[in-house]
Length: 412
Image 1 (cartoon, rainbow, N blue to C red):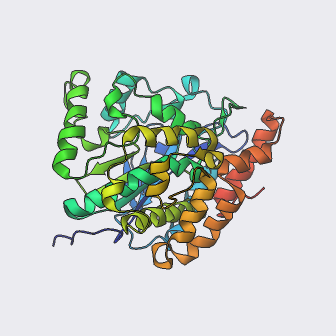
Image 2: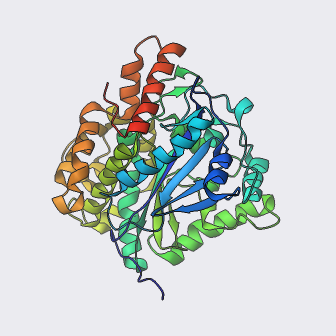
């Protein structure tokens, strides 16, 4: 029996990536294949674990946990993900390892420490490595939260795509969790996305400006985005294995194979409770825009790529402290007449404006705590203090691993 297609906000797909590290020194531990074999009996790339699935990623020190199909609500998911985090940690303890959160390892040397997944599905990873070289931060040192939102038909796709495009630029202001590269703070709050913007420059059309083009039907998306990507990748992909929708590396991509839009610009947080609170905030903001309460779809749909990309770059650099002063953007989000708004303030006001039915009440409290205390990058920098010594980093990231193991927010 074919499942009934899901409409707007009738289901949610959530994917969380966590890094595997040595318990003693928190260096990356390439052990995801051993995890998969322990629980499934073979080196499978994806295994069913009840209401969740576990899967490999490009590198052996990252494992992904995701919903097994669309979840009808976000509220139960923190407990489900937390249960599986504990299961994985119990096994990793026998290897001297543990899971560690955040979007980038703070001192990993990817040129030296990268180990690609060598088993099932490896031909795709090897193709990426051959074309782009995956021993870099934008490839082998990143962990993200992917949020999939369904649509049914062109009308719903258009409204959803317009709303998602407007939320993408401010996601780092809520979710940045990668302030360190090579054990140093470089003044950028979301380094994962800074590398993400640039890691496929060899074929620029794959990522574009990260913000998707303003297209609102399946046929236009196919013509204006996907066909160009397939054409540009073809000389580098003689076997055609990369002629798939996932080759699109924009910050949100249409997955017409499952009728969802997949949002990719959310850094993974310190624990599933924080991850799902952030996801709930994003859903609330997108639903608010789809409802057309702040502005009409016709107005939302005409916002160009460049101003949105400019706002994204500001938020990548400064997270919630970024100042947004584009009048058309502010008007689209319901801030008509204001000359400038800090991104953190904008998020608080969007969440306050979202009706109760747009945002699960159980996740409002942890989300409010995050908005009050700042992005995870802000909290990490606050905890590390001015010295940013290796010992200070070790202490803070060890505490973050404890937060993941115990399912609690990091609130220094």
